[in-house]
Structures are given as C-alpha cells and as structure tokens.
Figure 1 (tube, rainbow, N blue to C red):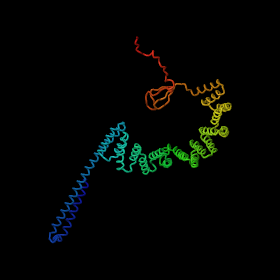
Figure 2: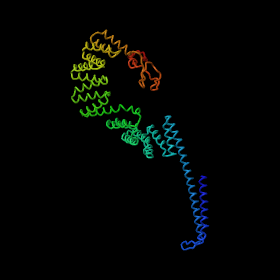
Figure 3: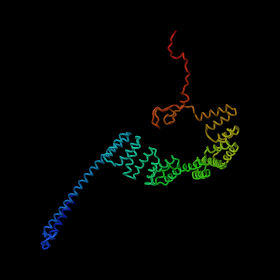
Figure 4: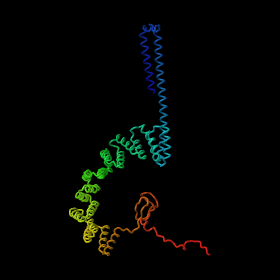
Length: 458
C-alpha cells in the first residue's frame, strides 16, 4: 500500500513539473483569451479550472476505490465468519454421525446451512442423516438443492441414487447412475456395479451384460474388479435360460454352447444345455453334455442327472453302459464307480453293487457315505452283523454323538459351550444342537386326585 501511494505521489509531482515547464514555454499563448460560447475568458482561468477538475476527479476516484476496497474487505470478513460458523456446525454434525446420533447431526447440519445456505458438504451430510433417520423424501430435497448448485458433482449424484433406492424409485436411481457414468465413463466402478445390480433385479440380463462389459473396460486395477469376474458367465447363462423359457430351443442351445466353450468351469451350463437338447429332441447330445460336465469339472450332479434320465425312460442298462464307458476312459474313476455301485443298489443288483463299492473302498480313505451304502447292501442281503459293522464305521467316522453347540443368532457351530459369540458379538446364544430332540420332555397328564384340590367332606 505504501509503495502504491509513493508511486502515485511521484507521478503527480512529475506531471506538475511537466505542466509548469509547458506553461513557462507558452506564456504568449496563455495571454490570449479563450473563447467559450462567445465569451472571452482568460486562458489562465481555463487552465486553472481544468487542473482543479482533474485533481477533483482524481480525488473522487481515489476515495471511491478506497471505499470499494473497504466494502470488499468487510464482505470477505462476513463470508469468512459465516464459513467458520458453518464449518464448526458441520464438524459437530460429523461427530454426531460417528456417534450414531442422527437427530443431533441433523440439527447441526441445519445450523451450518443457516450460516452458509450453499455449503455443499452440509447439504450432502444433512441429506444422508435424514435418509438414515428414515426420512428419504426430505433427504432427496436437500440433495437436489446440492445438485442445482453443483450439477456434475459425483458424490451428490451418488447420494441422490441412494435416496431414490430408499424410495424404491429404480428408474430415478438408474438416471442418476447413468449420469455418473457419463461424467466418469471409465472410472465410476461403484456406479457401474450399482446399475448392473439394478438391471439384474429387474431381470434385464442383456442391459446388465452391457454394463458388465463396461466394468471389464474400466481403467482400474485388475484386483479391484476381480470380484466382478463371475458376473459375465452368469449373465450369459441367464440369457440362455430366458431363451429356453421362451421355447426358443435352438437359440438357447447356441447361447449355452457359447458359454460352455468360453467358460468350461461354469457348471450350471451343462445341466441347462442338456435340458435344452432334451427339449429339442436331441437326447444323445444331452447325454454327451452330462458326461462332458463330469469330465471337465468332476461335477457329480451331471452324472446323477444322466442316471435319472435313463431311469425315467425305462432304460437302466443305458445308464450302466454310460457309467462303464466313462470309468474305462477317465482318470477320475472313483466317483463314477461309487455312483455306479449306488445305482446297482437302487436296482437291487446287490452282488454287483457290493463288488464295485469294495473296489472303491480300496482306492479311498475313510468315507462315511461309502460305509453307509456297504451297510445298506449287507442289510438288504440279510447279513445284519456285517451291516452293523459298516454302520459302526459310519458312526466312528462321522462321530455324530458328541455334544456340539450352535449360536442361535448367527448359527456358528462350536464343539464346546461359549458365553460369547465372536462372530455376531452376542452373549448367551450357544445352545446344544440336540435341543430339539432331547430337551422337549413329554409330560404325562397327572390324575385329577393328585392335583391340589380343596376337598370338602360331606
């Protein structure tokens, strides 16, 4: 400020010196009168008046600029005071939110907005607190006000999405999510996930698949989208299921074949693809699909489905032949052998069932399920002593008769009683698992003459 004043003063002195020099060199000219609308005015007076007008104008300009500066400082101080007051209430509101005091938080955020009406953090947090207090419509009002002030603020759009979801307005939620993705087309991973999940809830599998493809192209770390990988085969599979429900068997088969080729470990595809082949009248391809499901994933459900197919058509020999062919051509022989032995048991071909199950017993360790079926075979043949030996082995392996406990809140099992569950953080929730069977004691009704009755002798 002092430097500025010094520069102005020096400039004025120079101008005065320049003016005096010009006057001294033009004395003769200054003696001539100045004609002003027909009036003869001395030139010196005219110059004096002009000089005074210049000085007066300059003084007015200096005073006005100083006053404007004072006003600006005053307004800035007022704004800073309101910002400090708003920030103070906002921080108190945050503390209330962290302390799970939503009503107190709402009060502080409202005071913050009274100090500064367009304070974006307070608008956002006030809306969030209102939504937490089950007042989503009021939350929507404040969040829309925040969006009017900042039309492309992504946190505000996310807050509006949560409000719309709380109000069950999925169309509005999708509109906000699409806006987020428009603003951040390759970075809005959360928004894309939320939009995809909304389409999944609606059963709009193709739109969900489009969003999933965007997620796959997002510019984020591969680890951050690793959890989204299972959605792609699942959505492709579900599109095939929809085609099957619409009786478009050929299109469903083509879709499922694409999934099987690209995602051979997706097990549900084999079962649904075989179903599509059966509906399309291609039974042999359905059987081949079941066998392929086991070969690629050791998926026993495929073999059980194949077995049921042959039973329903009255051709158990076909299932036996398929099992035998599979056992001869695969390295994973134990499971199909066991299922074949179990199938012989279901057909009451007990000798062959026992023979195959014995072969399996020599290739595996302890198996309660295998011992159970060996016991059932012996029991059907009338060899109860041997059957009991196998059942005892089942009991030894599975050990079902030891006391065990379970949390009634989160169902966490425990071999011993606990007073506190570390999983759901609750006390006194562990009860024995046999409670339903052994703790419902049957009470016989007592005879009337045993009850406490006031006798009145005649």
